[in-house]
Length: 282
Image 1 (cartoon, rainbow, N blue to C red):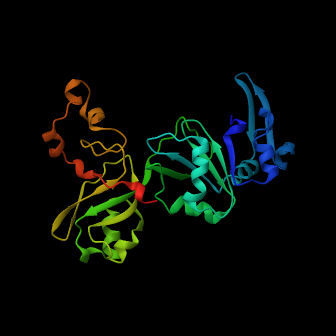
Image 2 (image 1 turned 90 degrees about the vertical axis):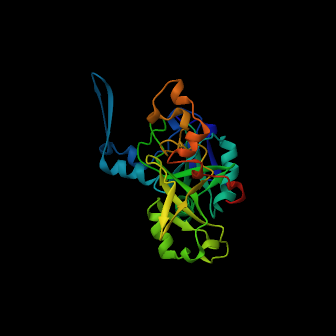
Image 3 (image 1 turned 30 degrees about the horizontal axis):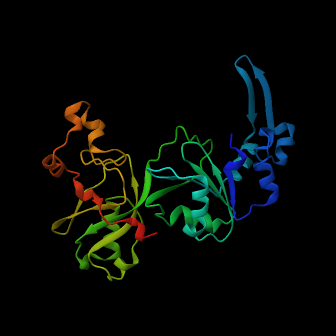
């Protein structure tokens, strides 16, 4: 159950919704619509295992519809306080209208938008960065369970250092990105060939697959660097754990010890992690 101090509005929600959502008693903590009062929408009965409540398709649809402009957010690899997140969102997303923020367990939050454009902007125009860490943003799903939910994708900035300027072609960059992840957008400095030290693109990555460490373009290999990903295993290439604790290496003292030569001889070496701090970007 969500406590009354775990719901915030930016700036102010409609009073009728807030009064239902954050009322002081548990029986009032969930918004109630007219359909709840209609007996044919809900079936309640007792079984030997315990009370059972069944919802009609219509009532379930109405419950889901209320949250259709809602995203699930979590700061990747770091926790963030409720008030800190609420203070960051308006400037981070340049909100046109207010949102409702709901604090969940396991450092997850729900953000419910009153403006559809704000919702689409937050969902698709990342990557978003808070305190130097990526803010994962996913569309809300029914029966979301914070204890069981696993983040499998993240939107990040990716660099391809030393990629020759003649390759700064939209069609070619799309092809390169397709081999690494799902393209979200290309840094405008790259599209205009203003900055030539590296190609920089925003990609959605599948965290269940190894990160690519290099890409072959035309007649040579180019390294791939990932900005501000805190934990990359240089053994298996999977983000989310370090080489010393890699499940693929097994366990024991031998697995926890990695020499400098071993690190540089692995397929997913240090080139994966970019030294460029993301704090200078959004």
